[in-house]
Image (cartoon, rainbow, N blue to C red; front, side, top):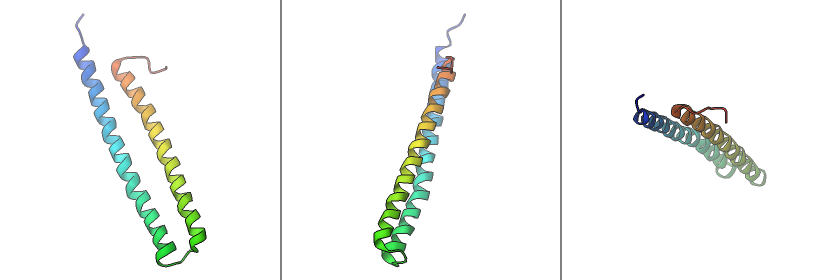
Length: 96
């Protein structure tokens, strides 16, 4: 029987690199969506005064909270997928 430690390490490294790239894309995509939404809302509230500033502040907080919750949920989901992929690359039972 041959030792397959190198191929397992290579598979694990490939999985880690793949998930690092996915996480980078997630952060960039999220920032490219959330940033302009907050900017447009802030300009509408304080720049053009389309929305009352007292109410607009609550809108900004609500958008930030929803964005934070969404980011947390996406990161947790991605961490679970990464853990399962690493276990699968190592040949472990993915049902832990």
